[in-house]
Image: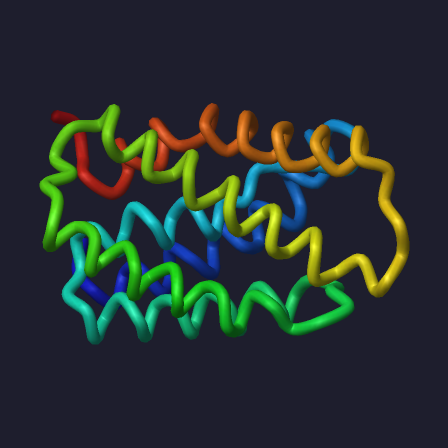
Length: 154
């Protein structure tokens, strides 16, 4: 995939996430397709393109979704920076390692977004854990398909 194709792929998948995946949500939770694509794409891109894709992804996510605070604009570039730095230290050529990386990042970002977007409301612990774990599980189901699209059939 060429570098600029990632930006178009993010936009197409954002529209897919807002339309088709919204109907397939469980208790209002759906996989964060944009974050998954960002993580897997950053494994192929250099630092400059990865951060640019992170800024673009965060901006588009905030533009098309409703959040109390603009968390994604700051989280996604940070995620892309950390994924690139981690991929330089550790080889992530195995799909299982990529899946574990997606698991950890989605879990962390989901917890941060939930904590930041509650607007001071008290959320029951069970609902919070259900939301975080369900988003993580749904994202892990979608991740192999994203890996196959970005890396091609191996």
